[in-house]
Image (cartoon, rainbow, N blue to C red; front, top):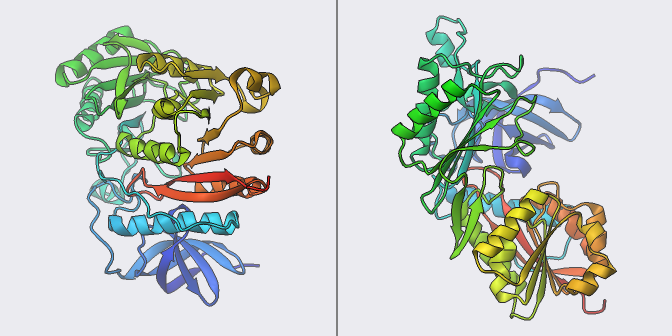
Length: 471
């Protein structure tokens, strides 16, 4: 029987592993560590899992600090759960992200790889997001210092901010967040102050009662700002008073919508936002392409690096103007539209009908006449009749969610056997799994990591696959 509450002392941290966990080795055992550690730190670790060859745990004490460590810039660092790598220089973050991609492709995919291009870092390491979602809660998370200041009592306070990791019913009040430019902090703090002073009920996720649920803010590089206030039920008088106060305080806001969500979960994709002020959507730009973004639209959350990512994708596709391009998981059509001027034809396929509706509208807005978009599952849509009508693809671009591609789709790609596949991924681990299956027909020609989210362990990766010459 393994001992519980095991603490390892004086553990030297040596590297980083997957999912942002630090790595150490002691007595032949690999130890994965959480808790804001940097290679070069020497720490004590309380183990939560303890196996024969490996263990997991959280740092409980620092004996000495790495000379690579920098001072985090956010007062909420270490509590809110976001931006977990603030204590590391950005250059070192990029180094570990590049290594993460290489490790996944080699260890999971077991692939023969060309020399990997250096990771493309973000020019903006703060204020780089164009969208944030905040949560209301009638029970604020209190830090140890706040509880100590209240003589050990835990007062009940409302909060508007981010969920604390592993505590679904606790929300940390956020004063200043560095992920988005102003006036986003002003918007959030204005709403919270008004709601508290007017005793508006913040939501209780356990009891599933209360009024204010979520606040979603989108700030585009065009300067347009869209606010979506999500409430549990209609309360017209308080809704109008709150939103009018917000618009008076923050006149830069270009549109306000509100969404009534009486459900047990926070998703709004099956709900209908209502326009209170403005046109009900925002417009964003990539190069000179303009995209309509509604309250339920998906769009790359880092516009600056989204443009970099799409340029890599377009470059890897190597389009000359004569190719038919299939854009799988096309969403609102942003990649397909972005590459359309270099292609003969773009065929976009996406499971969510509302996204396809947006894609069609975005194509029309940009006078893209050589793109068609279809709602449905690729496995079902891409049959002989479809190819006969739209043509066999010369290039396939696929940009799946974190779970990667379904094995049925991978088999469909092997059946289609396009000369090139450009695989855009937000999860190199599942990408590596899919590439191992595609290795039956394709070789990896290029690999380009792109950092979309500074101060986090998340990484995007673009891979160019070419059909083997003897197939």
